[in-house]
Image 1 (cartoon, rainbow, N blue to C red):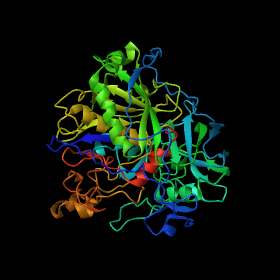
Image 2 (cartoon, rainbow, N blue to C red):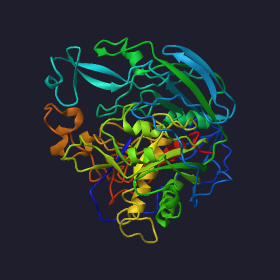
Image 3 (cartoon, rainbow, N blue to C red):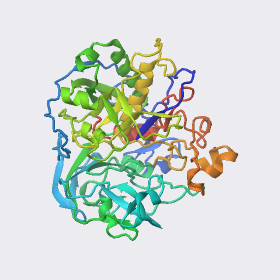
Image 4 (cartoon, helix red, strand yellow):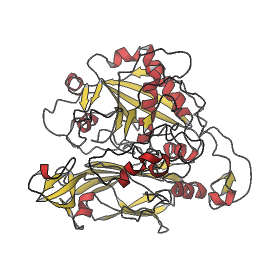
Length: 539
């Protein structure tokens, strides 16, 4: 969820990005039940083999958005009180399942022609713990006995894990389980988790509130695409969080079966298209910038033109971009946001509760600085953007995990020419970061994480496994192979991940974990594009 910036390099950002949208149907009449029936070149769309879905009549990327000034946010100052409000959905046709305890099974309806389902769960205040603790097996008297990142809990060293809320057993009327929190995860040839065979995936740490959008994996996309939508009828899910799982586990403390959640279900209708429109609400928390000033700033205009150019290659048009000032107290408090911790009562999460524009959109916060006081002084990478959750709770504004934040530091810096250029133009670099964080909101994970041991659940994205892509001399320090806790785990970077194939590759992809001026070109794959366009924020 965090985008890091590599040290400055010198190669311009290429505009010829991989295009996930805009193609027309091949016109073939060959029938199919899955993509495999189409020979590996075409895909199966509603039972017919085709090159791609038709374009939307309302969207022909790249779009040319104009940012406009919107109403300011007027929330009163809560002082030091922690705000964890239950927000009402603004998405048309949302289904409320009510306030339910963990372990409860609930039903919801999926109308014919539905292409994606989003479940948004919000804690009934005070009913759930924020963390659970996984014991390491080492006894302790104080936290200092346990080492870096480990706490002493009830005499045992333990890792604190955010109590993520995520439903489980999300089951279609035909009995297919589209998401199972406790499913056994296969391993790839290196022994790393391989999520590409699952019907659904969730990889966040989101206490108090969370969103799950399906489909978001290769098999899930194929199932929905080939059938012309998700199975209609009565679906079921089980309300769940990590604390509920912890209560039934040995070696886990802090578990609870008393958590309660308000559960909302959003269903996005089809037909599927290869293009779609995305609205953005921008909230300004700055000591020097205002929404009114930015609305007339040519650099901000360039920013969103460049964002539109990058997202356009996922088949997305930027629609309405609306700027909002935050209250004076919020501008002062959040211009510099500390992200040492992202718990529900920490500054980042409390900032996100101010996103109250009443429409399905991405909520983007612009701040002066993201600070990390506990940062490793030897870490060469700086955090320049962060999301509250993957995906964002589209259609339910103002939750503690409902936002993405990017710094204003690069706006107007450097030399900006006539083409998108992240190496020299700070505004274009910022645009790339905004596009990356927006893609997280729409449901994309990093193609390869920093450790080179975790990858997204899409089979057409390139991967860069530490065990095979790190220099041979460094492979013993891959995170999964460390035997000495004093060692620093190896980071896979663009130099390791710039191959031309699908392995030891991906540095150029929009969703690589690291922004590298010499290699990042914002490419996206067809499956990445499809996940983004099926999010309820896209129309």
